[in-house]
Amino acid sequence: MNNFSEESLKKHCPHCDPNSFALKFPLEETKNFWIVCDVHPLIKGHILIIPKEHLSCMGEYPEDIYQEFLSLFNKFSDFIKKTYGSVSSFEHGKIGQTVFHSHIHILPFDGLSTQIVLEGENNLKLFNDFSYLKSIYEKEGKYLFFSIGDKKWVVNTNLGATRFFRDRFAKALGNPKRGNWKEMANDKEIMEKAHFEIKELQQKWKNNLVSKN
Image (tube, rainbow, N blue to C red; front, top):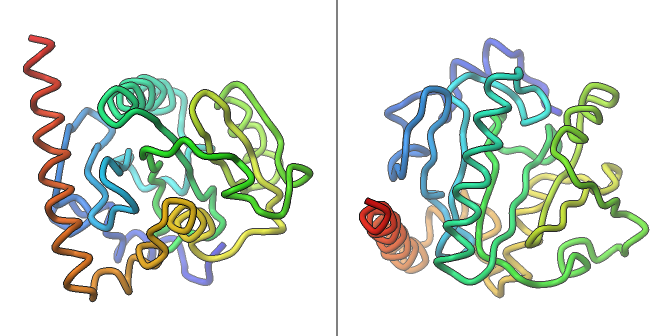
């Protein structure tokens, strides 16, 4: 949660402004979404699905936007898995957000759930359908979600902290300095490497589209 008004968050939100740095490296634009390369990738192949409407998290999506999200999530998850050999995802459902506008991360990762949640499996709950997240959000107003391959979990929200998943995935991927994106942005060496990874990802997406035509 945050201490800012909803009006203030929208006014200063980098995911609401089509010209912001957060949307600098696009892959695709649809009626309701931007799909972009993460400007501060945890690893090559790191993308974001961002709704154009200022919504806090997936659990808040109205039905039409939710249905479009499901299609995009499957489409881009398949692309990342095919291109990089594995796929994972996460979203801070109003816990641990540093940008208070829904953005679902999709990236290559094929490790164990306990590499992300070191506190143990008793803090994890498996689920099958994203509608479960919507039901949790309606009841509790928050959640922590991640997936590895075809498995999806919610995490005990008592563990929530700023950048909860970014920091943990960064360490599990062997890139701990990439967890804090604000610090990463000031690291010239890391950002030069990240820029190369982003351009490579954009080209791979273009090649993917060409191969389907």
